[in-house]
Length: 279
Length: 270
Image 1: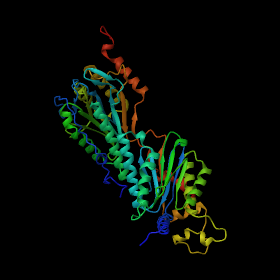
Image 2: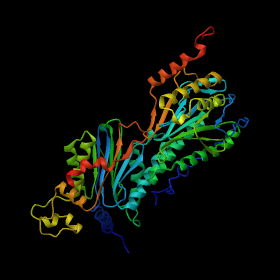
Image 3: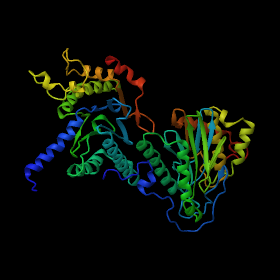
Image 4: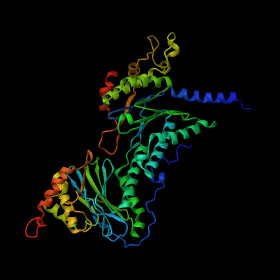
């Protein structure tokens, strides 16, 4: 039958013959260790453009993702309008750090893979299926990543409609996935702020019980701290970060006005903004 | 054994009759483009889906043999996704999909004297910025296709399609409610008017009597769309409607309308 080249099981990789382990050269040390916070980029990657810090935290209605807008190549700021929080479908966000080109390719692939499955099989791919798909892609990318090019560490956030709660997953460089209880972060600024997450949840109560405004404020504060402590992460003072939420109603952008108000307030409270050493 | 022009003509005619005979009883599918998006509607006797999402802004509905519909659907999805991934979603258009991928493939099967032609008639719709810019296509079992604007119907006969499209032209719906009402009427029209009514000869005209029900006492046949709808619903058919929404902020523009969204439109025929 000339009409049906596919195997009919909804596998997009088979359809397009997609492999994620494109041959790359340029040796670089192996990166990252498994853990809630990973640092794929060491800022010395040469021509590879890297996204920097992304953060996902739970709140009472779902999950918030925030990310700065900076993409770096070595020590140069290549782009200050990068979108690093990307929807894979109506209920799944992928926050990317590491190689920008590879991450974009992975996002493009997954968006098609999820939809291709749903449209051809007439049922949505399960959450577990989606997580495995991303794991496979990262595992396939491992060799290239070990050689120093194309390492991608994503944080995947989703709203689980069966359990009626937001969920956050992160991956190590080999494609293993871990679910976090409260938060996830990735990128060059993420190690510096790891302790702050713990401090916030121990002093202010768990993220998953916060309302949207509180969780947004904490997440943006964390991002601002990352920008202060990490050379590659862009501060919110110059260019507004991106913030998106996932709830039972799907994905929504936090509007610019709300974002600007919170950011201005955080910046105004900065102790360095007043006093003898005011900037 | 010699093979004359007459034989060739004869075999072609037989193939056409074979297919058209099987299409006649199929449930029509109506596509209507309106301000809020594109609506695809049909009534299905079984649980089998009849309207499908093909790509981000592409939907399809078909009548015919389910196995054939299925292989065409998969071919359409494969082609659209491969192109969308390897080039860009912006390059996936109904015009390219139907004209250069599906039509030639169907025509190949149709021309193959050793194969059974695909028994189907398919409507495709592509959503763009406004209803005026939407593109609709109707594709037949022999690979022939035709572009449409605003509305398109696939039904058992060409006459039925034409009648239903006239009904839609008159309706010119603006909202989803209006589109649902117009699409239901068009479906009824396409179902009830398979052939022109012969003024003197009701027996000849009657396509519904072939359905085998009814006793034959009352005036059995009617070309009233409302009657066709009422009978179909009485026989346990369910309305299936899917929407490509122009206004949704969601990633997925396609959704199958829930029963609750159809209740009001279907109520007059219950």
